[in-house]
Image 1 (cartoon, rainbow, N blue to C red):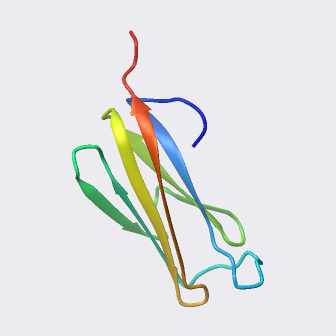
Image 2 (image 1 turned 135 degrees about the vertical axis):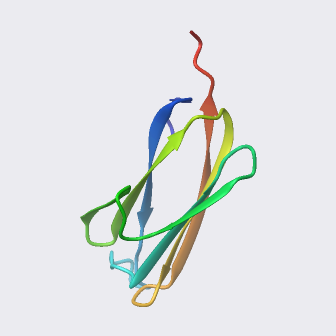
Image 3 (image 1 turned 90 degrees about the horizontal axis):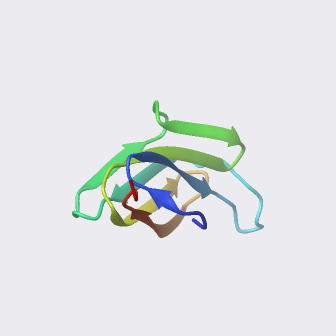
Length: 96
């Protein structure tokens, strides 16, 4: 994530799934996990209300971020495309 993120907003996590040839492919099952700065881990499996699937191999998941600090997240694809990726982003308190 390259932009500044503030508390009480929604962050859109993006996961891309590619085969060994680098071609985007849809996994059979997708799980996203995110951990807030307090250590609470939340897990969600596609499909669901906070999920998006704009094109083959690309999935989004919206996370509300009420707490400032470092957030961690991971995407796991299984079945037709076994892959894993993780990242983090920092949420800042609003100035006023």
